[in-house]
Image 1 (tube, protein in one colour):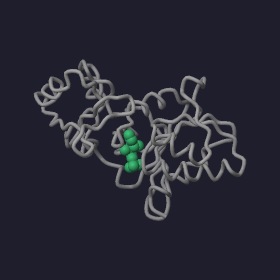
Image 2 (image 1 turned 180 degrees about the vertical axis):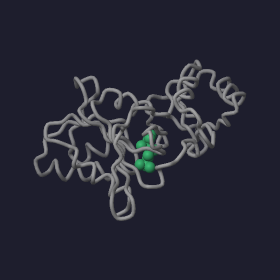
Image 3 (image 1 turned 135 degrees about the vertical axis):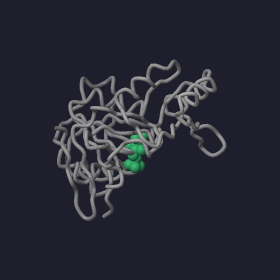
Image 4 (image 1 turned 180 degrees about the horizontal axis):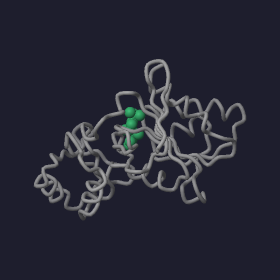
Length: 222
Ligand code: 5RP
């Protein structure tokens, strides 16, 4: 079993019958959804809220019930992947372009668990390009602004076309290399007009499950 699958299957232990469960997006969450589908077939009663069309389609195709966020009062637990996470459990997300829904779902959750392979646990955030979701109106102006700020922006592509998020926006990846102050950077970027969401997820994860070799390590927020 690879590290992503190990982390994903370990996270199943935190799921209880009748929970409202938030489902993240990505290749690590793929293993979670597969395992969850097996448990649903065996009688687990669970309602899920998804963070992307990709996850919704996969879950529904495997017989998992998906509700919209507006249909539920609160989410008990959300399990999601991440692109980088540091020892304070701050992280970068949005490699799959689902950061906006992922942040909204995480903020509506009583508890958030991230499942990652060992390469994602880093001393300092920023090697992974920071995804920022922006609206398309005036996007060239925004790119210029990011450039002036020294953020090395790159509009995300899907082949020859721009990558379009589930909510119809664009993604700019900022090649920062290192992030000294994740809290202030999130604020600074979020305040720029045209920015919808930033892939910095600070003080959101309560617990991270890291797949490491043949086993898993759990890091709790202190
Ligand atoms: C999608 C995300 C993913 O959780 C993140 O990119 C990790 O993906 P993977 O599990 O495929 O490595 O934030 O927007």
